[in-house]
Each structure stands twice: as C-alpha cells, then as structure tokens.
Picture 1: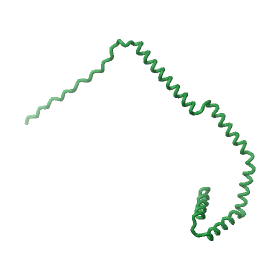
Picture 2 (picture 1 turned 90 degrees about the vertical axis):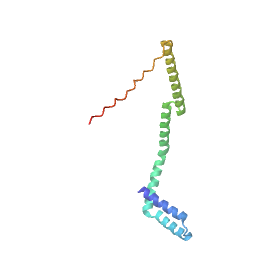
Picture 3 (picture 1 turned 135 degrees about the vertical axis):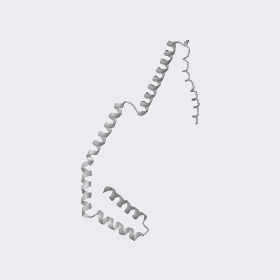
Picture 4 (picture 1 turned 120 degrees about the vertical axis):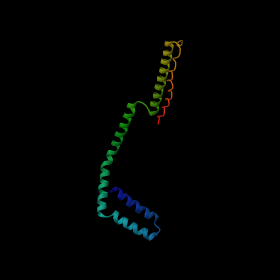
Amino acid sequence: MKGKVLFVVGGLTGYVLGTRAGRERYEQIKTQWLKLWNAKPVRVQRTKVEDFAKARVSEVPAALWSGVTGIAKVVSQQGATPGQKLDRSIAKAENTIEDVEDAIEDAIEAKGSSKPAAKAPAKPAARKPAAAKPKPAE
C-alpha cells in the first residue's frame, strides 16, 4: 500500500513539474491538493502522527546514546581497528613462514646432505603389439 501511495504522489509531482498545460492547470492541481491536505480524515491522521512524534522526541537522545555506547563496546572489545587487525594477521603469517623455513633447514641439516638423491621410479616397459592372427583356411 505504501508503495502505491508513493507511486501516485511521485506521478502527481512529476506531472505538476513537467506539465505543459500552463498556470491554469497548475492552479487546479494545487487547489485539489490543498483540499485533500486539509480534509478532515487527513487532518486527523496528521495530528496523530504529530502527537506521536512529539511524544517520542524526548526518547531520541537516549536511543542515540544507547546506540553509540553499544558500538563503542563492540569496537573496544575487538581491541583494534580493521587495519591494525590486518597488520597483526600479516605479522603472524610472516612468523609462520619463517618458522616453516627454519624447520625445513633444520630437517635438511639433520639428515645430512651427503645422502644421494632418490632415483626417479622406472617407467613400466612398453607393451608389445599383439601377434597377428592367422587367417582361417577356406
């Protein structure tokens, strides 16, 4: 329903702004709009909305403060900005790479480099083609 109302209002606004009918048509539309805006059912609903907003306006600062403190808690619990977290992750990854490199070097030194390199596995022998079958006698 809300979408339909917005569509109609947008259409009317576009028509008013883009009309080539001249000042007379504009005045007709304006008069109808004012009649609608000042009609009793619309006035009643406008009053309800205004009263609701006035009653809730005192709650706005508290709601904003609550939201800001909630965000601050989340950020402070994480302890760092996203950039700082990324820097820490990169440093951890670099340390891990260095640890792996050191472990590989230690393993090579422990085994000793005098040991010959392992031979590559031999290829299987190529299959011989099958012998030709003799033709049957007729």
